[in-house]
Each structure stands twice: as C-alpha cells, then as structure tokens.
Length: 83
Image 1: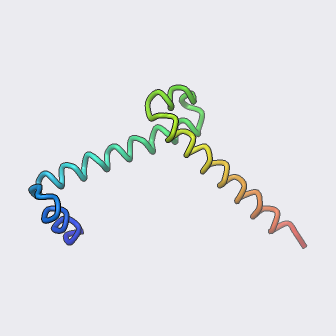
Image 2: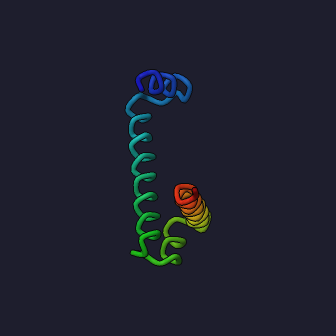
C-alpha cells in the first residue's frame, strides 16, 4: 500500500493527505454503491430508485452479474445431480 501511495503522490503531484482523502472518498463511494445495489437485488428499493440514485449503467451491470451468477449456480447444481 505504501508503494501505491508514494507512486500516486509522485505521479499526481498531490500531497499525501490529498491522495489519502481521495482514496477514502473513492472507497466510500464504492461501498455506498455496493450497499444500494445490494438493497436493490434484495428488493428493498425499486429498480427506478436504484437507477435514479446510481444510474442505469450500474443497475444493468448488477442485473447481468446477478443473472450470470444464478446461471452458474444452476449449472453447478445440475452437475452435482448428474450420475
């Protein structure tokens, strides 16, 4: 982690404090996005609310990923029940 920080400071010309603040902001934004997308997938918020908050691209991405995961699980279950 230290080498990432040092390289970002060197290459961006920002102070260590600025880079750390951006890292925290970026991480919090990602955690919030994942939290809201999880709520959407669990049916706790509507698709439209998720789109209004995060954008259609994120919602469509998580829907594709969710479908793919479901297909993988279904395939795996079929493999374990085959003779």
